[in-house]
Length: 292
Image (cartoon, rainbow, N blue to C red; front, side):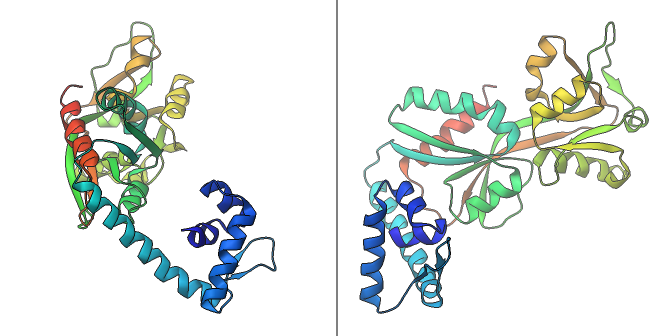
């Protein structure tokens, strides 16, 4: 574990900080490991510590051993049935900002011995982290086609067109021609919101590349602020604009004859041994999604 931390961080001091050890203790451990193997594992000549050829060979095996150890540890914990420990999650932006906080809060109320590590990434990055087991569970927007992942439905979400609130202006429906006349503010490529939006357009014979996208942003909040400022219109999850609509900052409408629905999903690695706390969280999350 110490060797891998130094290799990943490229620094003895950074590894020591992550492991809550002193730097001399980390250096001593690496030196003892090198002596036992009879080979130098790190090149220390530069400011950044770099793996040697021997170090790279050892790293590949060390990574596998640590992964096997983690799976073995979880297999033992599986026999205890305890709902405790730390859950590492990654949620795509809309879920992470507008759904995950409430879900996690309710879960902790029921199981106070559980702690969470939550990252906010787009759907593609979250799926990759679930695949390489760097996180336990992913919460994503839209379809996930990776065969190595189990996909569990969490919530049915609707995307709507948002625009600045104007006095005495209410639009339940707009035509696609009206929509295409506005400059668009969109999420970045790779986001679940962007993918669902473009897939629906394609299914109706509209090329997404023909859209007048004036601004791409990686934040729902930034998009809302840009729309409020009059820079254009956008398409976001309806649950993301509840507060702004309540206080008269934004309005929303739907596009006639087009439906932008998607599913929020839980994703887990099919090869992962689920702990009791992970199974309970998945069940709890599915039930929570039915109450929103």
